[in-house]
Length: 459
Ligand code: ADP
Image (cartoon, rainbow, N blue to C red; front, side, top):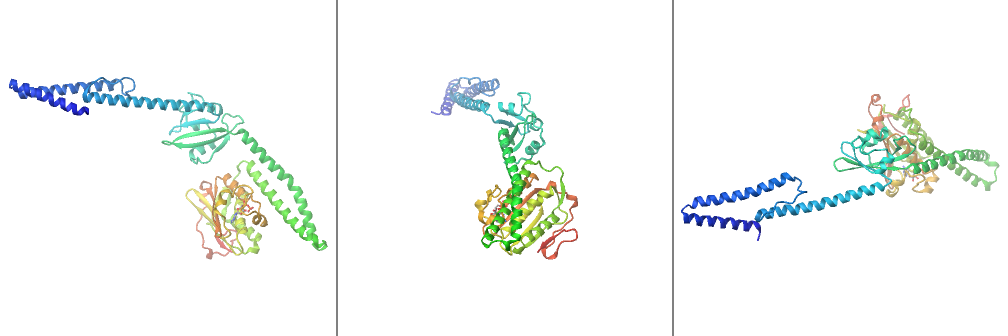
């Protein structure tokens, strides 16, 4: 029987007995009142035992509940059961935490927990070796105070944690560390630190090797190409059977020269630190220049160019690099768009970015290739690309240049319809007060003004 039922029975029995005694004594009301008083006193007594127990042991973890019977016995038993479950659950959790901590000690990777205030909560032994953290001295210290490299502070505050950060170890040794942060809970962070010194060394050797080989190949290729050109200038003196091979040799020597040039560009982008001496780049005039060069290079294709850019968009960066990135994109648009295509360049100042979109209505790219386009030597159609003088390095160069300027490249394309390459550069690099205004409609515009600025141009 459920305890409250027997409790009810007990109460009714007590009241019946009190009523019987009262009836015999002729004092029914008094005996009923006395019996209710006794019942309340018993309940108060049990409540007091519960209260004393809770006061003595608020977490209910240390002592067993008081002994009792009836409803109160059932309540105390229920609490006792919950208490036991709680004990087991916390022992289980403690065991897991202990195991996690013990296993993390054996890890060579540093693991740090950072609380929502940005202070260190916990770290494993590897961090003491990698970052020089000391327990308990550094506990509750701000992570940006302990790792003082400004690049770390930028990475930490920008919260673009899908990327990793590679910097030298803060203790001034020659180690190279890679940091990655993940957000969890209430804006707490888990930071992973890896020692990538060896990997970094191998990577530098690879870069040096590619740079040196490209440099060494430069001179022989120039000499071969020079002789081939001299021979071809006197083609009429050449036996007819040699004319076609000569043409092919010259085309391949040009291709080799392009590859070496692009490899050298990539090597210098990878080895040089980002330019410290920044230049003010007038985007409109830069685009005008690139458009002229591209028009000349692809004159036979008679593309229609349209540039939509306000005057006075001045960006701080390395001009030669930004020129190279945009001319690669505009050159590709011209290269991979059949004759009489339309190439549009739109420059927009958004809240966070300066966006430069290069769109064409050319061949387009199948979706599956898009994530790999910025890999070195990746070409969608290698025969088409090398026929058109492509090296497969152009977009890798663009990506590098944009990332050196704090930007990124977005690619959208549809096969047979065209492609759009968007350069997103940080708006913080715009020199805002030089901004004048308005984009002119293509129809309003004729050509460049004296300073070479084009508001919007169709040619
Ligand atoms: P490449 O020197 O071969 O042009 P890139 O790195 O510049 O190398 O481009 C990689 C590949 O991406 C190209 O081979 C080409 O297949 C494709 N691609 C780049 N731009 C375009 C575009 N605007 N339209 C179609 N395909 C393009």
